[in-house]
Length: 108
Image (cartoon, rainbow, N blue to C red; front, top):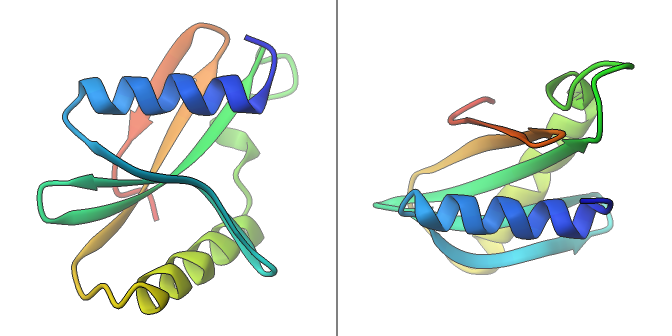
């Protein structure tokens, strides 16, 4: 795997196998981007996908910064308002380090 797009496709496939339903990907606004939008039971799930080929300079989880979390939250709120969705949501991270996948639910 060499690109972010490949990582996002792997993440989508992995999450679908875990029972989540795909809704959208790469939803972009001027103030933030949502890598994956999924549904899991009654929840809307906004997934940040992080990929690193190796952990020499820190793993995928260490790549998430507070400003990025703010942008993701703002984009998710906008998505919910724009689509008139009034349902619970959560923010997950799917971290891919080489071939290892870590799915963290309700991270922020």
